[in-house]
Image (cartoon, rainbow, N blue to C red):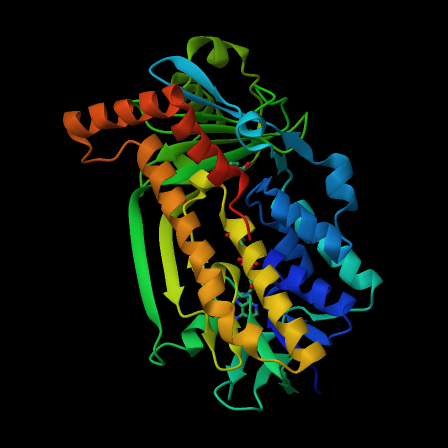
Length: 389
Ligand code: APR
Ligand code: PHB
């Protein structure tokens, strides 16, 4: 079989790129290791920048998001028992949309099915080959039968553990990493959110975040230890812990109920350079990871897709490789700014084992400065709503 672009991975990055290419008349096939239901069972991020929302519209997959997504004009920071609202819209003229990644993925899958895009799920041993030359191809097996897909380009949208980045190890790949000494324990519960806006809390017992998926579904997180186990966290223990990390009136207002999902995720900052190796591109989590504090992971996958789609379109429409040659530098320039922001949000809001009393006071001063200065608040807000593409 032959196609123009093979996309490895059916997460938001792969699906969004695939849909933009299909709409532009560029042939593509998506190869995914797990089943469609498995992909849709993963609970991930939930805050979309305007740039990403616009890309979903452009892909023809934005309608439900526009109908059901929750536009947020601000969020709350709490520390030292106080609340402070960051007025995103007042400071930047922009807002974010709270809408689950799972829904984004579902809408993109539906759109792909409606427009006749080919996706091969449960494809095993997916391997990019010969991308250094002019004729790359991808091999995989399906139901025990081996296949080969010839193509012009390979888009590695296969997440942090996928085969694309592994295929370029030892070929000039450089990586940059920071692992944080804690994780996030997250739950989903069908209870109304405690507030109509997100609450990020810095507390001496550790960070906490109150988020949501809808008017009736809450998404809550607490900072936990790296060796914590989900089984050790009953629902009651979780609710007691998150309430203890919030100002009293917020804790009292919180509706609790049985969790429908509970999991622990480690926090990591990671960047691979470059993001292009001949005719293979690293896109989204395959090329970089941010800790979730700034809600940037999904949005960075979208900006990579924007740059790569523009580059591929230019290649096919104008026979120009300029966009392709520039992809890595363009994407990395935005990636590093989001890495900086996510690292800074993480440092500012979490309790580190080695913070000490000096570090503690510095964190408090940072938060006081942030909330007391329009310039500092604007800097936070412009990063949170998303830097321009
Ligand atoms: N073969 C084929 N597909 C693979 C393979 C493989 N060997 N390994 C991984 N994949 C698939 C995964 O199963 C997954 O569906 O690649 C997909 C990668 O999707 P994501 O991990 O969701 O990554 P991405 O599309 O870059 O989305 C960006 O934003 O909220 C953050 O980290 C979060 O998932 C999120 C990301
Ligand atoms: C979420 O709703 O899952 C969420 C929101 C904001 C974040 C991280 C995660 O910073």
